[in-house]
Image 1: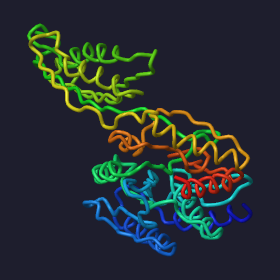
Image 2: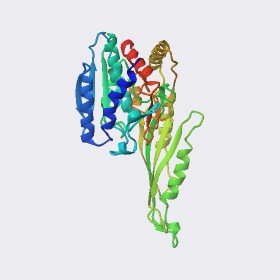
Image 3: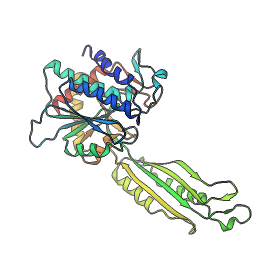
Image 4: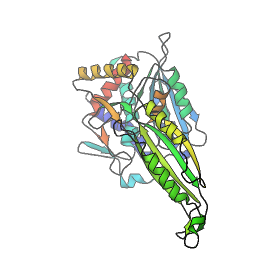
Length: 372
């Protein structure tokens, strides 16, 4: 595995230096073109797909189908970041001891670079892909995948399985499970009145919303780690006015589809206590949970076997954060997430990748490409 870190460093540096915040169309298009050339240099057929005003997505095809009845192996990632342009001045790309820093180096340009080096590793050894591989890299994951969601789901329906290049769990474990996400907007309309002269003539939207939120937050279930968070709240015009309107945004996290359905039914059944108020609930599941399945466990078992052959243990677990891997799981595609580098500080000014584990993780990825 000599030289793999240096190869990875050479691949990731130009990507990190090409700052690419979500929504910056020109920069995202330029980086997509840059990454496309890297895949073409490795023999891929590359298509750049316009993202409806959000930038450009990239689809790379590697190898030809060799097995009837087997769809391609899908590799999923993204090259947009949460960091605004100029973050490089505050978080420079550099190697410090056992860490490589830079905006997006961990989440998740480092994973894309690892894939490029893994492909080179196969070429150096004279090995080939077991079957066709599709690589889909998106430009809008950090902003919610609005323009890529349908395409991801389409690719997932026909894939035999998927590997997601998001960062690993702390310590290098892969992700067999991710919580799903549901988003709700709860709006109340009441009756305005003077708070001092005739408060009884009014029906406070704020007071009603607080009562409703008590019910909403009561839907949490610590036994199965279902959580609800009222993240924003707005309402009222002045302290001496009985509020006419109030609203809140609620984030729900869950491990299973059953929990998502339980919470959704309860949200749809909410009613105001004061009959003078009206209540409207909008929203629903944004991403179903990435749940462990026999298919994803089979992918994990292969990864564990190959990691053992390389001399290191590979663990698997879950995380409360969602990714585009959730979208694949939602359409029934066996998915193994967290195959990118180990590190930390995602979305922060101390984002980093650990240097020492990188060569083994790149080698593992190469072995999976030739065996799945």
